[in-house]
Image (cartoon, rainbow, N blue to C red; front, side, top):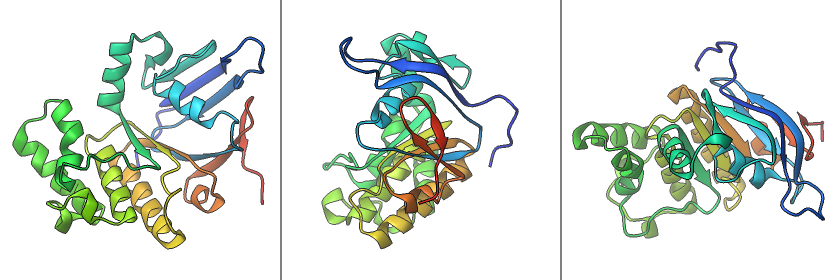
Amino acid sequence: MERSTGVPLLALDRVGRRYRADRPAVLADLTFSLEPGEYVAVMGDSGVGKSTLLNLIAGLDRPDAGSIRFDGTDVAALTDDAATRLRRERMGFVFQAFHVLPYLTVEGNVALPLELLGVARRPAAARVAEVLAAVGLAADARRLPRELSGGELQRVAIARALVHRPRLVLADEPTGNLDPATATRVLAVLRAGIKASGGAGLLITHSRTAAATADRACELTGRELAPLSPA
């Protein structure tokens, strides 16, 4: 795990987002920080703004108030092209629905981020092999997604998110479609991968069991990310 330098990797300062003037703000005056090497879970009721939070951090949406700084960059000030480069180079994403490409093999899916970054074929192949071994899919590199179980598909998605050693992994309900036993294995792989990469992770989940795998867990209420209260 990367040692903290005292400077947050991610810092939200009094962030607000309102989609309609005649409706309450989705997020208001939200302040939160994530340290290098830290893995944090975020819980909250449906509609409280968890997806909005991820979109703002990733530069897919812009706040109406406040600032978001990631790895020394003011995310809200980026152009669309610059935000795309930031996501491609320094972020990794894991989604509930996997989002693997059905016509590519496992190794082809995992190699995509490296191809987009222009990494040469030989070092890219070595890195893909390394990360597939880490998630337990080394023997499945040539298989197609239709030949895999849900847990295997999610491990492909995790490998793809980690292959370029991102500074931040954003995981949105990554175990929502999995049975409890498979979810436990997938969460262990996700945590280990984030820690091994030296980056940080933000896990959005409805599951207290999943949240318990993080270094700390918070509950989003719209105005704050407070420590998760006991069940």
